[in-house]
Image 1 (cartoon, one colour):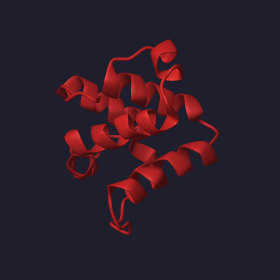
Image 2 (tube, rainbow, N blue to C red):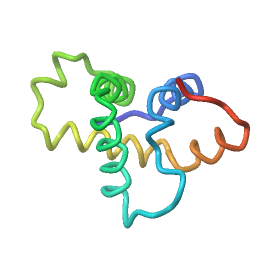
Image 3 (cartoon, rainbow, N blue to C red):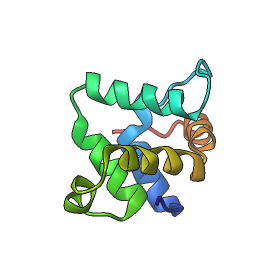
Length: 101
């Protein structure tokens, strides 16, 4: 479903969703962690950010993602967060002071 990102792609992902990633560890599991990110993106009215992250994590086109079941698409996002160790990315980019867009 999702793919392992290169350093360049991981940096792109951080630029896209870095500001939506919780800086504390107040979540129960990967599902609640991803839900916080998605909720923040929606609250910011930036659904295109979620779509761009999905494209990056899956190598699928907008059309391909649009044809998939919602649960499958959310699964791509969840798996991508896990497979690419988003918490380690958060910690690394926070320590080096790398800003997101």
